[in-house]
Image 1 (cartoon, one colour):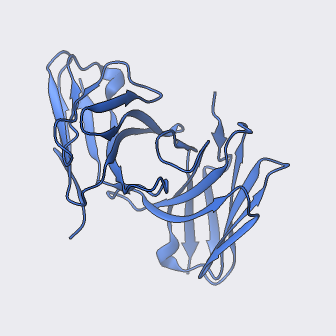
Image 2 (cartoon, rainbow over the protein chains, first blue to last red):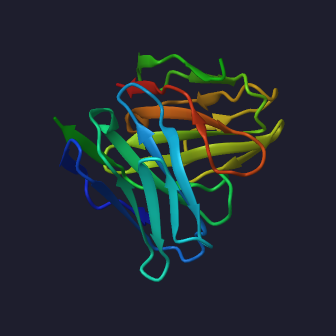
Length: 113
Length: 113
């Protein structure tokens, strides 16, 4: 039972364009959402988060949007850069904490020059 | 440098031979956890620890043990490894404050023959 789903295993985007990574969840108790980025041979690193009381959070080129009614969140990267090529995981928890953080399957983003 | 250190990074072993993957963090974090990453399944939590001598099961604890005798260390023990425990393992820690923002180690790739 995958409570957090990233239905696109991979995504390819031209450098300079917008990258949009999607994530769906099923548990209506989730109220805190995060995105992590992972390079090969490294551990994931925290990228950006959003609380369920918000519908948008920005940090530089990265923006996360939350649609609670659709149980959907997305990560926008604008403009995309070659260094953004990585695997992106979305994660969710039922309270703001890592104790029961549930991760999606990941989406491999490739930025083409 | 703030970091989470895992050892070994790579290990090939045989079924039934007990092994321990060590994890140490130098950030004085109270919370630590173990995840495994498998293709198509993302990151799944094995065990977590809220503080010294406090551990709890995650989503996939079968076949694993942990201990938290000191704040900085959180070893993962496979008493009798089986081939289905072949995976990429990540240790993580979180600063107090329940941000959900985990600091991950670089990963330990384990192969059980």
